[in-house]
Image 1 (cartoon, rainbow, N blue to C red):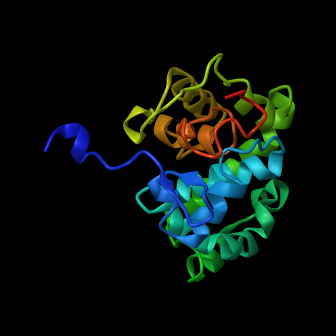
Image 2: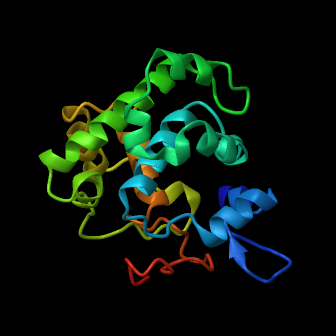
Length: 206
């Protein structure tokens, strides 16, 4: 069998007739996330802070795990309101460490609180605050992947975004994590060319 014949298909056609990548076709939760949310523009501070936080917690875990725990995360972190989370102290850290509904990783919990404080500071440090900073790293062109192998895991822009965020005091914001964020919030469009979602964000034409 040739290599081309042995490769899995780039997209899978669901019972609804819509073509999706394999990862978005194996779990109803992931399918709903892919169809309605992943890759759509997020430009508000609270929404971006939530996604920065969840991307950090996802490191080393599956995204499905994070999605299943997202309601608990939102409850535990006051809806990811940066002002509220920025005020957390030792009492809240211990509360979060005792919350079985979330990922109980002390370093990531502490980093999320620190990132909330950095988000609040950014309002005075950068035009447009966190949204202004993150969206300033939108590239001039977006990938056009025909297969999963064509999708980058980082880019010069994600490297620069990671460095900029670290310079403002953020943690758990490496280039790969930031590229995943850029994909998730529509800054780049890495939907496969044959996917029904390709070009649906309104940010990129196709």
